[in-house]
Amino acid sequence: DAKTTQPNSMESNEEEPVHLPCNHSTISGTDYIHWYRQLPSQGPEYVIHGLTSNVNNRMASLAIAEDRKSSTLILHRATLRDAAVYYCILSPYGQNFVFGPGTRLSVLP
Amino acid sequence: NAGVTQTPKFQVLKTGQSMTLQCAQDMNHEYMSWYRQDPGMGLRLIHYSVGAGITDQGEVPNGYNVSRSTTEDFPLRLLSAAPSQTSVYFCASSYGRPPMNTEAFFGQGTRLTVV
Image 1 (cartoon, helix red, strand yellow):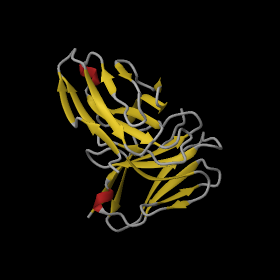
Image 2: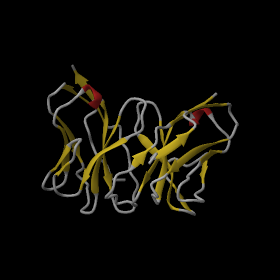
Image 3: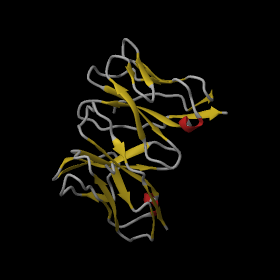
Image 4: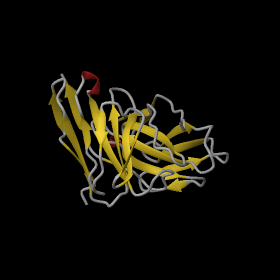
C-alpha cells in the first residue's frame, strides 16, 4: 500500500498560516497526492490534490517537494472552522485510497 | 446536485440481524466505494465498484456484501450483524478510477451500533 506519514496533531492560532507536512518517501512517478479533511461528525471533504507542481485553490495550497517525497498543505489563514483531521493520501495506479490516522489540527482563538 | 446521499444516518441493530445501508450519487460517477471508520482511526475500505455490474473487495470485506445494478446506487448489506461491525460507514464516489486526478465525494455517514 502507498504509505504516508503525518504528525498526529498540530496547533495553530486563528488567522495565522498553517503548514501541515506529509512524508511519502515511497511515492511512484504516477501517484497523485491528495489531501482531505474531516470535520467532527462529518464525512471526509476534498481539499486539494496534485502530481508534481504546486497547486492552489480557494481552500488551500499544496507545495510538493522537487523529489516528490514530501508535501505540505498550506492553509493561509486558519479559522476555527478549519479545526479537523487532515489526511494526506496517495492515489497510485490501480490502488484505492488508504487512509492513515491523519493530523488533528486544533485552532486556538 | 445532492452529491452522495447515505441512508439511514443512524441505526441500531441486534446481533444476527441483517440490514442494507443505502448510498446514492447523482453525479454519474463510475467509481464508488464503502469505508468504515472506527473511533480514533482512519477510514478502511470495505468494497468498491468501478462501474455498474463490477464490484471488488477492499481491505475489510468480511461480513459485508455489495452489488451495483445501476450507476447511481451502491448498497452495502450486512448479512448477520456482529458487535464488531459497530462503526461509522462512509460511501464515496468519484468520476475516475485510481490513480485519481479528480476529487472524491463522501457522504455524511451512517452511524451503526450493533448490540
